[in-house]
Length: 355
Image (cartoon, rainbow, N blue to C red; front, side, top):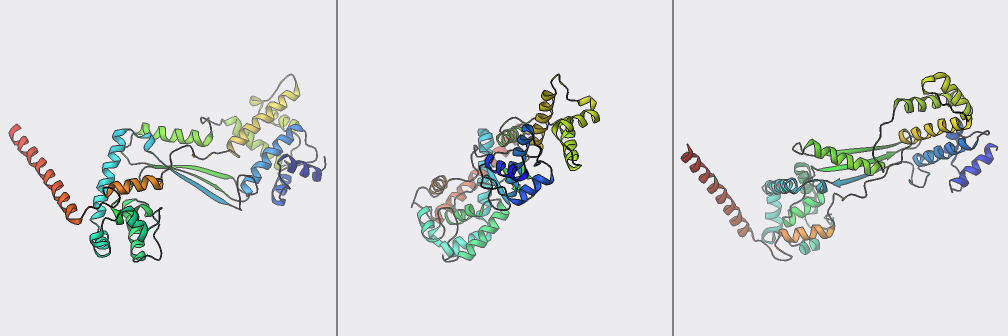
């Protein structure tokens, strides 16, 4: 089969109108596309062509010349009740600190005044949309935008959640627990996949290991397995042989057996031995150089849905339209301080009695 015919055959097998020039040139230069291919060679050509198409942005999985996909996943599903309660208590403490921030107090006092906290509907009508993005045309948009950026920097909140906090008193989740998967690809390059796990130091090492293992299994589609030295040497050997103009798989196997007799591929049937050699290379190639990753779409996403956020905001202001006045807020704050002082006093007296 001539190269022109092979290119048409390859496009037909991949169900695409044509093979892009840059992909075809790479296949020819690396000798995956040659005129003397047998059936085994054609299988590897198909696998390599799919990989080249994917990383070049011409394949069905990608569009455009390059790109990056990230997914961020919350960790609540892995934490037990006590661990989630610890995060909730810490989140409330962070919100109390944020409420004392001078810029927050200034915005609430000067812009919102007696209207704070706004109900969900009031905030939507005047300041933000359902996702928490600030209306550019609303009064004080620039001031609110700068404030939410500052709160994001200090308290590890998302800006869209910080805006709800300023307006309604909603307590945002603190972004110190998440796992992020990232996939990056560029023309003429491989696909890079990474897992970034962010946790606070108090989470146990066993729990961190479980979170990583579950995420890894989701991306790989299976349990992870170690790639051995033999497979890595095989990849390197075949690549070097092809760069030097290496021939058929039978010739490659012969050269391999002479170079690495301890890892030789032999069988009564030479075709069976060649098949084993080819399949070993194919498995190693697909695992190391052209893996197929899946994103963690089966997990719970990090961001709350609009409905969940609305429910929490309305609960924070004691129901839609029902507000807590500043006087009630001060009274509640004084009550909490008095109770804390009382507990300390009782504890101190008990310590004096025991001593």
